[in-house]
Image (cartoon, rainbow, N blue to C red; front, side, top):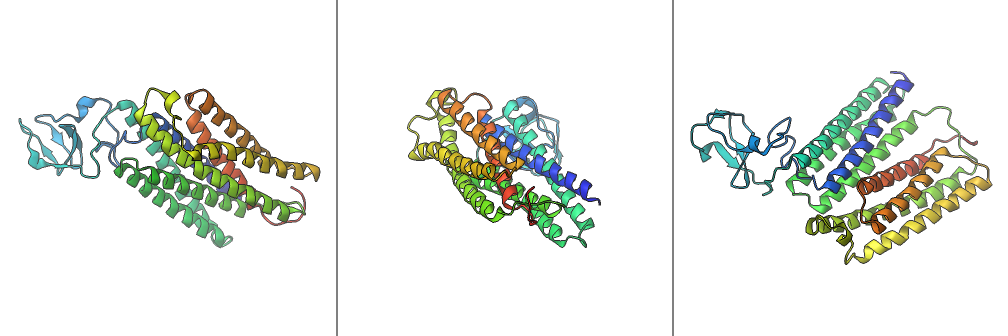
Length: 340
């Protein structure tokens, strides 16, 4: 496989991972996380239902093993393939025991289902990266190691998604799910760096690497605080679903630290930009990172001052992950000695 084709596959996988992150943020914003209460199917179907009536028990109906219905506001799962009689018979059904959530909202169901479809596409893309690395394995064995880690990481991420659903959206597991997404981004960037040719870096790269490493640590602290603030917002959204102006009532101190910490992150990056400008060094990727930080602060201000306008939450999260990806890319630039 040619280097260009392999890089295109890696870029596709990276783009799909970012798309899944954005879709996951939309799921959280709309409260659609339990739109599909089981996993990997959705109400026992490969293609989820569109109407509540599809989940009612029906007489003289052919049911497949694993198919789900809602009885007395609880989920029931078919134990085997069978055709129902004229009366409901509990012996053919077992209760769904992983949680007690049994609501159907077609809007939430299809948002979550699309999120899962994107996850499948991202998984297939990482599989393609692994296959591509096998074809290049003799030339670059490091690629095989990294792509294997990506493939295993994606499988672990899918399992984490299952545990998130089974736990009825436990906040700690959602945060872990997000952390694993950042690890996948980092691994895919390392793969891209491994196949770059002809790259050059400035003589002062070690100073730059130290500074960007410090900036990355600050950003990870900021992202960590942001996930905890988001957990608080999720609880507020549940208590006041139609009152976004109340979501930041009694906000914890961590929210105010998170808000102020963004200025430290921006200040650090502006300092790095000044150093690069003074030395006439141009990194396009750093310009993108700086833009992401500025837009991140702007979207945060929109949420705070304008009561969470639609889509600002997923955009805020996407910008944070793009910032992380850009920083990690710069931190892992290859080794030659002159300016890019």
